[in-house]
Amino acid sequence: MLEGKICLVTGASRGVGRGVALALGAAGATVYVTGRSVREGDAPLPGTVYRTAEDIDQAGGQGIAVVCDHADDVQVQALFERVQREQGRLDILVNCAIAIPAELTDIAPFWKKPLAMTELFGVGMHSVYVACYHAAPLLLETQGLIVNISSAGGRCYMHGPAYGGAKAATDKMSHDMAHDFRAFGVSVVSLWPGLVKTERTLAVCAAEPEKYGDWLAMGETPEFLGRVVAALYLDSERQTRSGKVYYAAELAVGYGVQDEGGIQPPSHRAFLGDPPEFSPAVVE
Image (cartoon, rainbow, N blue to C red; front, side, top):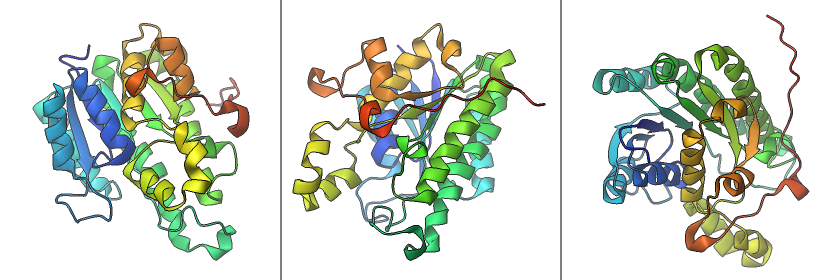
């Protein structure tokens, strides 16, 4: 489906980014994957950017690993210069890189959590803007697609104001970027997953099964999100979705995308709330 297409997935050593990259690779794409983990043990959780690239090859695509710290704008600029030099194009950018402070899920008011929570404003908000900025010239050539992985935490209380603020900003930036891109045919969508069965999530749920068991039963594999991204890209009418925020599970139903084993993950709209609808007003 995506043979000949060039994709870039940030934050793909593990978690959502890895799953998205594997799904795009399985669809036949060449996928650049970024991350900081070079060897096992670099992070508390398993996974490296090189392992992801190798697994993309095994899935039927071509994986290209790039060690990149998305907190460093110079490294990000070099990343896109490399894609320009090696491919001369970019069809899909998926922004998954995010800083996850260890205290993210602590149940405490924000002033009792460390100021390190503001790392979410760097890798997770600032990094989205910077990646889109450098990707823009490449995407203009292909009328490509940007998908920013966000969260219903931008609409409801989730993990505190730092997390919520970063996600709300990502959704609004996606809307505003779509306005700037509209005349050039580039689409930008903000995508909300449900509970994703990442390495981190599975570890947390295993530690407290009585608390998270019901949620985990409704969880999505990381690859599910990638299948939704691929379907969105192949939608000839995707420009009509640009600038909007979607639950991945709802797009999946419309596109006929299922998770492993034919499972249809549910939308969490009923208890997490509706995605935002932004004003059509434009002030130049």
